[in-house]
Every structure is written in structure tokens, then in C-alpha cells.
Image 1 (spheres, helix red, strand yellow):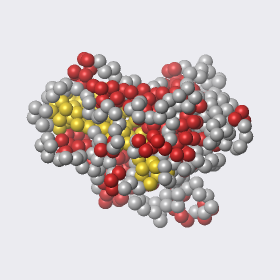
Image 2 (tube, one colour):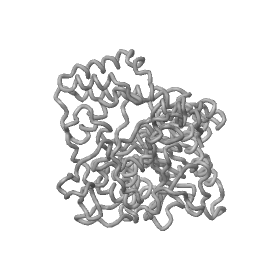
Image 3 (tube, one colour):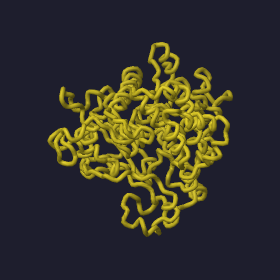
Image 4 (cartoon, one colour):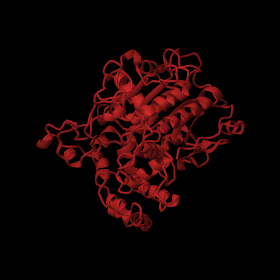
Length: 517
């Protein structure tokens, strides 16, 4: 259920991190932890009593950023008609759930605080509607909410990163210090489950930096935490970590995907028929799979079943582990089909890959200078465009010049399955499985201290990915193997998807009356 992590044994460290390979930088993209289903279609009557700590953390966070306001309406999905018509949809004039410019949903920071996020008021276990604490169970989860199990999974990832990058390799300091932005960059999408996952990872990475735990009050995602860790996020139309939804020709493949074409594949039709024929949920599953859905018609069925299983809730007896895995593979195929093509990678992820490369290249250039030549690491460049700082004085605000992070030794990116999965495909992953919760894709930049050469390795959870471009001799490290690309070969690999701004605008098309800023 949760992504596997490598055991950092002495043999593993000798093989993966020999002393002549100096680690210069690590950029870690991680999926959020276990959550409740995004929508409960198969078992709407089931309770989800797995979010007591998650509810507390979310309420403390929303109070800290001054956004502690209940929103009863659901967070809308991107709408193709609204995007095509732009501001011309008169019926939407008073529907402020949608942005004026793209017709897509507003940032999750504004909309995800649904009623579950205000169950804990200023006096403790108050319900959001002013009733007594007994009127609303503080354990209950809302749809799509990170659960307490999900928090533990990301704390585990944070502890692993600490063991590797602090205890074993010493690339980052033992304590967080007064100005972590000199060596640490943190970015998260604005979804609550991802912000909370980022919080949990950081508490695992630096457990002694957070507010002390007590028997009654867990570590809080509060103002003190935000002042310690500079966490960045972006408004929706600037966000690139769930695919570039500002690119019309990319998003339309998900708003109206060729599901009927996918069902023509025999194995996917077999999975569909097996699920539709189940005695327990067949009728509901068929109704779901026959309904158009963003990205995949099979994923809603898989997501609800997988979320139940991840929290130890028994599935009906006629749903075998093999069928669940097959549903995941079918959903993965539908979701990621566009990403297996260069054009899909260019339109959906070229901007994000460009950010990765810019951050990596700045670190490589800095490491190539003589020791002591540069007193401080340079600040991040254009790759931080669109970043806003989570803050106690307005929720999200622009950084001051002094707050702009320097080139990081460790960069953390909190995202989704549709962040980590496509990036892994771009970097050579051949897995057909749906990405587990808390999965991590890591880009590591090395320097061979013997000859000064720069190398890049990409790891997905506990496996180093084999990049086809790096397999020929001369394009990988002679002793470390083809998973350790030369920096030049790595750049050659991603070159076909690196669209220029001019090419990008031409290939994406544009929404009428809108533009990407």
C-alpha cells in the first residue's frame, strides 16, 4: 500500500554512494500519503474514522494562515466548456468557484477547507456549526482528505531522508538552523492533503524542530512551524506539478479522454467486465465506469477500493487482490497514455522538467567552482516564478528579496500520483502499476571527485531507473552503471520535451480571452 524504501545497509551505501561520488544535490518529488477516496461512489454509507490528528493539524494550519473559513460547496473539476468560452459564460458570472481567466478551479488553499476542517475551533473540540463537541466526530474524514495513516507514512519518508542525507551522507545539517532557505527548498501544491504530507515529511526529517509533543496536543501545523520552514505553493494557473492545466491541448486529453478507445484493448475490457460482474458492487461499478470522468473511468472504482484496503477495511469477498491490481493497471493505462508520447510530455511537463534542470544546473555550476571562491550559494532563478510563501500574514504572499531561497542541497516537492508517475515515465520507468501512496522520485546530482565529472541518477522509491539515453558507453559512469547518467546524457534525454516558450504557446493553443502569465 505504502511505497517501499531501500534499507540503508552498509552494502547498499557502498554500492550506491561510494566515497568518490560526492552528492551535490537531491531533488525529491513525493506523492501525498494515504487518504480517503476523492469521491465515495461504491460505499457512500461507510464512515471514515481515520482523521482525528489530520483534522487537528488542518484546523491549526488554516487558523495560522488566516483562512479558517468553512466552504460548503465542492471543489470543482476543470470544465472544458468554461475553458473554451473563457469569460463569455454568463451563467457563471456569480459562480466564484471558477477562476475568471481559465474557467478552472481556484486554488485548493481557498476551497479545501470544507466543514471537516473547522470541527476544531479556538476552544478545542468544537464543531464548526457552533454545536457541542459530540455533534461532530473529530475522527471523521471528508472526501480526499489525508488520514492519520497518511501522516505516518510521510513521517516515515522524512525519517528515511534524514537517515540518508543527514546521518549517512551529511549533505544537509543535523538541525534546521535559523535560515534553512540557504540550503533547503520546499514546494507543495495547494491541496490540503499535500500540504499536510509536506508537514509530516518535515517533522520526520527534523523531528526536534517542531513544537514539542504532549499527551493531549500533537505537533501542530501552526504559525511557529510556518516560521521555521519556508514552504512555497502556487496558485492553480501557475502550478505545474499536476500536469500543465494551463495548456489547452494537454488538458483536453483528460477532460475528454478516448475512454472508448482504451476499452477496445482486450485486457482492459476484461477488467471492466470482471468489475461490472461482481455480485457485491458490480451494478455501481458499471455505472461509474460507464460515466465520463476526468482522466479515467476505471480510476474512481480502483481509488475507492484501494483507499479502503490501505486503511485495513476488508473488501467484499468477491474482490480479489488480483482484480484490485488489474483495476489499478487499467486506470494507470488510461491516465498515463498521453505521457508515453513525446508530445504529451512536452505539453504536460516540460515546464516542470525545466525547473528541475535549472535547479540542477545551478548546483552543478556552483560545485564546479573552486572551494571558497563563492562565499554564498546563489539564489534560485526563474524556476521559482509563481512561487508564493505560506505565511501567517495573508495565507500566501510574495517573498521579499532576502527570502528568495538559495540553490538548495535538498529540494522537496509535495505532489500527487499525477506528479510523480509522469516524471517517472519520462525518466524511463516501465512500471504499469498505479503509484503507491507516499511514493518518492529523487533526482540526485553527483560529482566524481577524481575527475570532476557531473552525473545524475533518478530513483523511484527503492529502484534506480534505467534511462535509455544513458545506456551507451560514454554516457554513464564507467563504474556505477547506466543508471548513473552523465549530466550531458541526462540533458540529451530530456531535450526532446524541452519546449521553448514560443513553441510551447504554439503547441498548447490558447483559451479564448485568456493567457498564461
